[in-house]
Length: 343
Picture 1 (cartoon, one colour):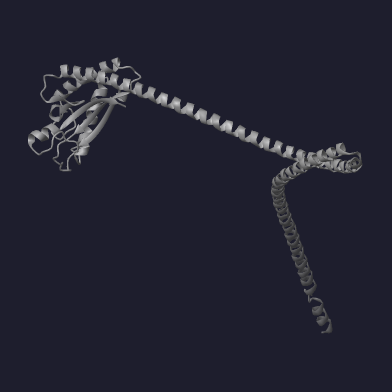
Picture 2: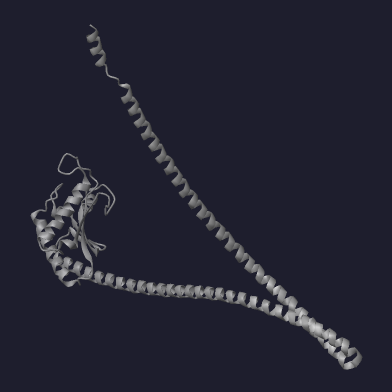
């Protein structure tokens, strides 16, 4: 029995030393991290204080330079005042010297005393001359500095004058180029107007046998009935014949107009003011007018007209030739207009 109790007591494990070791290790790690944090804070504080000191030194230098400039200005004024005082003293001493020399000429007895006074006065005069020379040197230095500043100002004024002169020359050149450009544009417009007149003249000759094709202002107007069935954008056979004549005239015109004139033939589609039902192919007059203008442009392209010389536009019923609701007015307002213009 005693042997069994001894064996059980030998199997009991003591955990306390291991727990103490782990706690010690954790405490040492915590102390190490705390030390690193304190060192980092110290270095950061030193860096910040160093920058503050540099900034303070810089501010002090700026204040010192400002004070030196003020002292230099004050010193110049003091030197000028001192120079004026010394000049006045020098003039008074010269007058006194003249008086004493006069006394010497008047008598020998008074001459000895006058010589002594003259010697003392000459010494004082020499001292004042020395001081005056130093003041003159200071004034001369200040004058040189002022001259240097004046030269810099003069250089800046010269540069400004040169810049203003260049600006005036540039403005003059721009104005001249603007005049030339306006002249060139006017010439191009006149030239385009001449070709427009020739083009409309040819169209008038080609299509003169149709009453429903006419010229209105600077536009050539086709009544819609000439080209399209009612409510459709498909060009009918009679309309294709008229458009073929138009395409041939445009191809010939394109060969004659110089390539540097940017012209286009604008094809505008217009309808009357009768609204569409919205249940057919087109929802409204905008779509119908645009589709008709596009059909004319595509037909012209198919017959040799360069695509870059054509523009299609739809105006719906919003640009009528005549106001009103009569059948005759509605017929006039349903149309395709051709206009030769600049791009």
